[in-house]
Amino acid sequence: MKRFLIPIMISILLGACALIPSASQIPSTKVIEVISTAVSKEGTHVPEAAAVTFTRSGGLAGKTEQWSFYLDGRVESNQGSTQLVPGDVSQLVTALTSVGIFNLKESYGGLTNCNDCFTYTISISADNKTKTITTIDGATDTPVELQTILKLINDFINKIPTQ
Image (tube, rainbow, N blue to C red; front, side):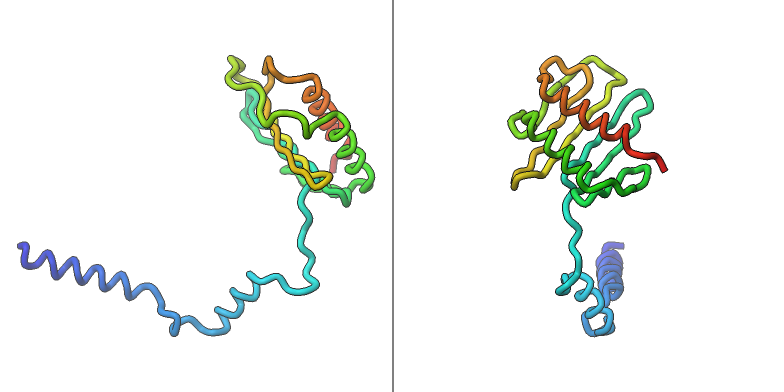
């Protein structure tokens, strides 16, 4: 039985290697197509990063909602996208920076006994700086500045026209 086991294993290994095409078996046009899509061409618009991203997850239903706000006025969320006046998003960024978002810690809240609370993650890019902050409902160490930031963002979201 051992005599047959080794040749069978070798046959299986060699057969598996045959399934992987060699470079000569791939049409050259396919290789060029893949390479050209991976390389950015001159004049191609590279999308800008969101100025503010806000994620709210958890609650009783355990849902996740995310909004990305761009300086050109675009708002993208898991409910769809819309276009605002570009100055609206700039005003939000100015308000968040004036409250002191860049001076806050990265995380607040730790463990709480709140089973249906929401977790909030805020990311901002402004003035050549980037900051991400995470907090949770009921966190006893949440500073007033972060509470103000959450209110500013929630108020901004509530003013976005629904589609």
